[in-house]
Image (tube, rainbow, N blue to C red; front, side):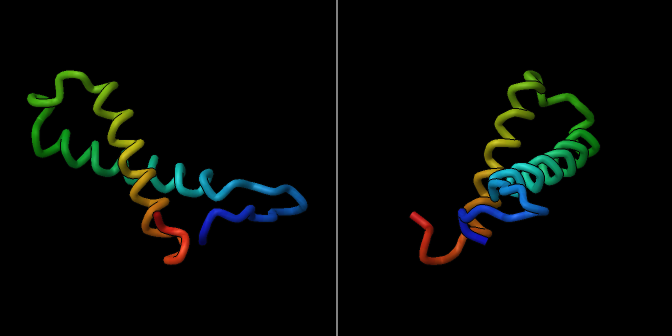
Length: 72
């Protein structure tokens, strides 16, 4: 996908919006699985964990879906 704008009905959108949406959805899935398996015993600072998980998964999505020539 790269880091070029996406034209949607005459409005240009950043590809980071798609990466952030993908990161959010995957963070919700990972968080719910962790809470189900750990039964909320280990995650003390849930807000910090959620924010860090969202950032890590958004960066991972941006890295994986960017064009091979644009990485690093």
